[in-house]
Length: 118
Image (cartoon, rainbow, N blue to C red; front, side, top):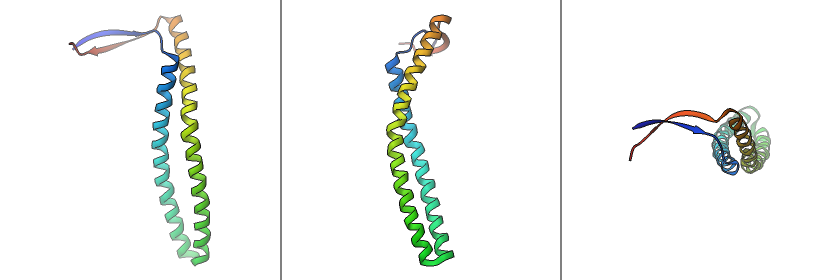
């Protein structure tokens, strides 16, 4: 493998925005998956506690509250899956613009890379 120095002088605005939007989408899916597991465990424990403490009436109240919480969670999940990549795209475009401006003033960003020879 040959070592060489690579210098980045420009990032594409749209390509950086798309990359960060996809990254944010995948990240939000992982976060929502973890939140769904935590939410499920919390609701199960709450229902078991309600059944043990207050009987049927308390359990019914917890089921109703759980249904409302589940609907709220589902709505927020849909909103976040839509908004987070949009915000990520805008942030990526701004990041690329700032990087390009700084790279133009400073001469770019150098780093070492190992390149497989062909």
